Image (cartoon, rainbow, N blue to C red; front, side, top):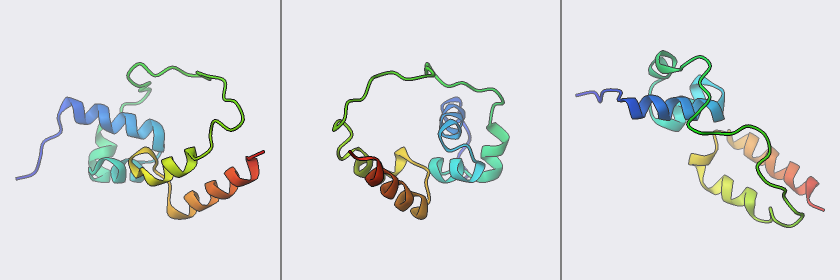
Length: 96
């Protein structure tokens, strides 16, 4: 029997869509089909208590290892393998 979409699933789909900004990325991140994701995307959804803008000042050196952490925890990112490699190269360039 197919599982039914619950309210918590709709929130999860929309939170993932805020990060991924694509139907296919959201489907991959949540495990729902693209048609299900498309059906439950809420236009104008802003997220559960998310604030926009910077939340902290980051000092040089504070991000050491951060990209490796993100890349090794795929549920935090909806990037393709090529995009992950590109991001690693960008981070290497930005390190002072």
